[in-house]
Image (cartoon, rainbow, N blue to C red; front, top):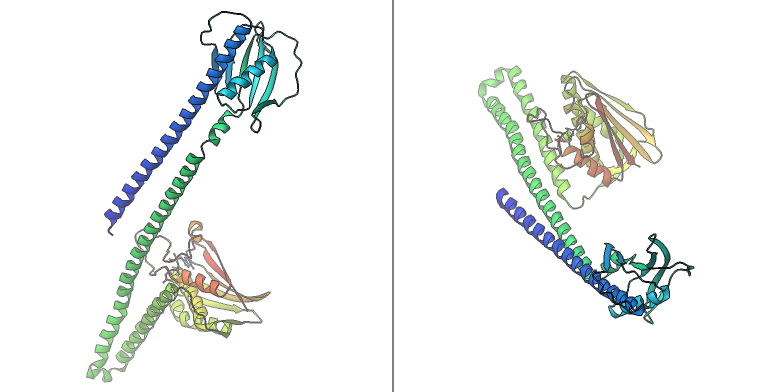
Length: 421
Ligand code: ATP
Ligand code: MG
């Protein structure tokens, strides 16, 4: 799939999802509002009838014009001017609410119309089993005259939401679909990036291999000339060029092998008793020449008394050469590298310290990611594939060891590796 098709598919799907989610929100809101206005209508109807019955009981023939006022979503005031007995009112309310099937907890308040103060209040709940209302508060003394009343429903909203099971479940399912979709997109983009990086890698690697091959071929042609025998100095020169380029080729091939190792699901380690100090000496010897050429040096301080561990010789040596290679590559001036060891409780600690460019704090978190290289704008004067540290981390994990990087920009980097015996 090419870039624009992917973009089109993702854009379209996002739009569809947004449409779906908005429709869901719209319907849920609508359904809730409908439910709420239905219950408000039922309550108002019941209260109106209660008011009329009170009027009737007081032989008042006034025509009630809209006596119910919904003060807040949960509070309904009934504006009449009559003498009201609380228990009579409670019976009326209970009856009318039952008729309208309003099973809500409610509190009724009785007011004195001269000073608008509450003279009586009581919390009442419908008992679902025998369909009776029962009082939830202790009796309150009642000695003042009461003239109008209000009814408060403390848990009206939560009761309404209880009837929303279907909507809640469907919204949760929708949420899962959206999350799953996001996850799929993320995977697709990640795979795409990875495949781009891989293509880059193959192009780079081919280029890197071509250079030593053509140099070797040129030098060999010179060596094949018959008169080269008469010029031993030149002969030696070209032979050493071939040797050096061959070494470079060897390193490149090693890198490809390291990547191939990482591509495997599981790496089979060939474990044996190995002496870490021996491997360090070998790795230092290989890189020493290049570092000396740059005017630097490697100091070894191998203090560990016990340097024998059970590990894979090839992989541990690759780990060491990768780290020494980085210490050298990322030190522009004269690399001064120190490699030291010491024993810990159940293993050995290897430290590699350099005085190079250091690694920015932000990059430290992702430094072990496959193909990650610290960005250097457009120009990368130091060649690499971003494989080395990833390989190192994977191998240390396979050996149940630990790796830690400390770095200060423009000061240097220290890498500590712990490997168990
Ligand atoms: P290669 O796969 O050839 O090793 P690389 O050296 O670029 O390529 P890594 O060894 O994985 O890849 O290192 C990743 C990045 O971490 C490097 O590109 C570099 O920016 C940074 N880095 C690694 N070691 C050091 C170091 N000692 N000092 C400063 N930066 C370092
Ligand atoms: Mg490297």
